Image 1: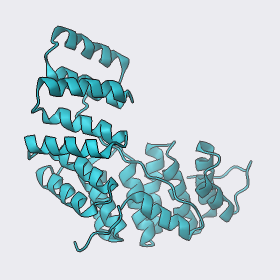
Image 2 (image 1 turned 180 degrees about the vertical axis):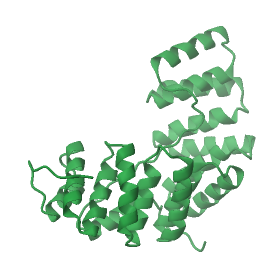
Image 3 (image 1 turned 180 degrees about the horizontal axis):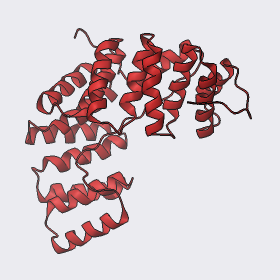
Length: 284
């Protein structure tokens, strides 16, 4: 694909560029990743898994499962305790290393995350989830070429892994190779139909190539999937602004401001399209 950029590529970087062109400040597009957590993060499930552990105190799988649930509930320290226990019981438990790596990554402890992903891959060289996770760490550490290699490996191993396509798309997007990015985001959308992030990212690439109608379509769907997504509403406002539809642009920026009143990108966009506080706008 040619030389990768020296800085990490992300949808946030593209959004920063486009919003800067429109006189706005950047917003961050969040990513999501589900490693091996197969239960919802609810107190009932935590209690059930605790009972399993009490009956089987030396079962590493039970600790890994409860750790996954605790991690999804935001109880990261408790999750680490469980993953540590699982690994102490089975030092070749690749999933526990990958899950612990995800928690470390969420805590911005990237060196620890990288070490765990490396260990997971050492144990299981065909573990696609670990390659996606390690690639994400490489991207955060501004090593896009290594990230690209990991995402390619994950896709080769698991062509149904939407996160791998999404993350590779972000790298293409950062290189301004928007058609490649759009292709990857399209695959990610097909594989992760209830996630807004690939739609937002694809919408931004459509804006970058001046296909505002397609961008608006993606961002319409994104805000319906996640009505409280600040980036989706702000991006939608920009798409409709570029299309000359000030009514929908103002309505979108207003919805973003309802989520966060002091969000500069939405405030400036709202002002550019002549928005007035207290006025009702048609958003669809």
